[in-house]
Length: 298
Image 1: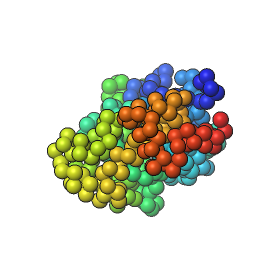
Image 2: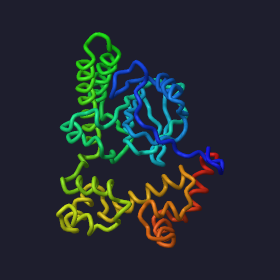
Image 3: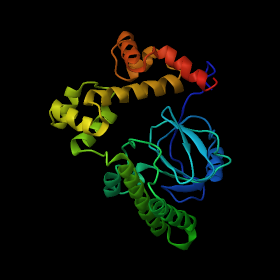
């Protein structure tokens, strides 16, 4: 808790548990709670992990929040939290039954990362299989991954790690297909994918579509058309949405002054940041912070 009585978000690096193979952990919800306790982390606090969480419910219901959007997961649903997103578990983690797969992006091979677009946020969450056949296909892969992950002593360590890596690759590719199926394959063109990656990297340095177009070798029109085909909005909106999301993260989960938040997301002064935030969020940064923290009971 910080000096003003608010809970700051916890940045969480990937640290393997004692006795677990490096690179990935497969846990039930009780195991996740125990892991958090073992690492001195409050499992119910807002966390900003530097690694992926693949979360699925087997029975019961799990409430959680991912970047200011609340979700309730039912049996068969999946939530994929990427590194850097703010994740907070709510009711159900101690009562529901389910599985969480934890891994850093570097654990998977480059072809899998590219094919599954591992480091790109899912356009919609949660990921829901469209029918029982699809649900069972994903579940079979998960069951095999869980089984192999537990059988650490049966193979040489390097072989065990490779078996788990390959099974995790199958799982994330299956989940990427779920995403594509429910979103109408909204992965988009190469131009859109490169643009979104560049925005993720540079949104605090540039808010101009022209800068990204010049950097990537496209015209502004090409980026706008590619972005609208995927999101329904133009390229400038994608940049502004990413800037707004980061500003909200900092306002709610840190105690930085609003002027410092504006600087962190690339505004030259407090007036420009306040004007942008009011136009996009409908309220001032300070009012948003007070309302959001009030809703969390702080």
